[in-house]
Picture 1 (cartoon, rainbow, N blue to C red):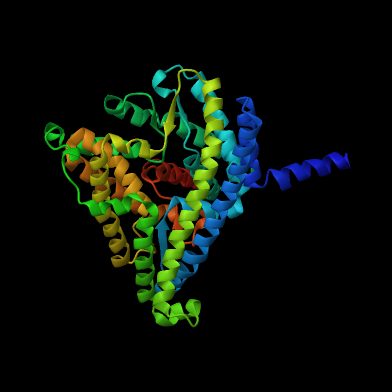
Picture 2: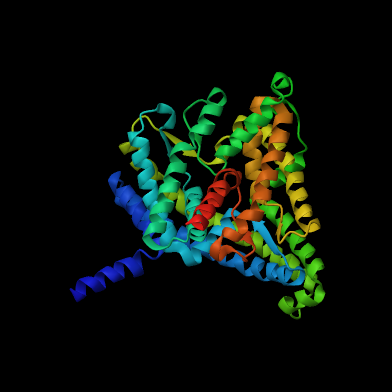
Length: 434
């Protein structure tokens, strides 16, 4: 019995507790079920594991740059400065929640597949395949549901897995319904912007009568905007400036405690560039393991669930309205700046910095739907409204983030604001009553 116990402990706490190995095993199972060649199985498993390790290395670089600088800001002015950025928040949180988050991810996906299989409605047969967004939601729920309901262990994992599965199953129907006239029904959106597409469509409908005459794709945009289509380029511009601004707020003396003999301005510029480099490293790791694990997941879903369509990442929508996407992005920028200035001016305990993820990815996705339903004005307004909502929601959401609170990092995207914030507030109310 002792031998069996030791083997069980080894498997659970030494193998399954390691997220890279666990995801590698999931990839292995998926590839074997598809009867892939031995070389393809080996390639997919190794790249899944190494990709997760690369992601972790990037996360450590990000955390090592932003956390000390944000702590200076917090100490100097008595606020919690927050940069909403999924990749960075995910990487930092995974350091302490890998086992439970991966369990939520796997159990939730299996429940999701079962639900899609048994649901008769064609419009709901959507298999969510954006694995990194699934992991982000798993971590987010692990943090917030544990904080608001006070759950832990198996009850927390099961509750979060069920919530995630319901979200992955039913929300892709929103963009599928709204977009079928424009994109067809070969795919739908699988992201944290499902309700963002509704915001874009509703904003666009305000200008519906003039939509055809004012299609954003008939308008020529300045060429310099291409910089913001690349996350690394955008962050390499934004983060050094942000770090210097924080340095000016806290003062040279405070920054010198981190920079040592190095010039404090040069130190801040380099830390901002290191942050961008960390994100670039993380994105490389994400691409590596996603390119390996998605085919395994997709193969399983295709074999098990006939007549289903994939729910995919938001960039699949951009080619259907490139300029609409850019107008959505342009509309989201002033909203992010307004929220930042308001949190400073009103003395908010949480200062929200403009999020590159909300500005670009949310803005572009909402802009596509805003343009389809109401031309460039719909795209511009949709980007502004969605960005305003997403940034404002960070203020009440951030204190619910468990171990992530105080790190200076936060999850972004509008669905966290529109859907999950009301649910979490309800959870807090229920816990208070009980």
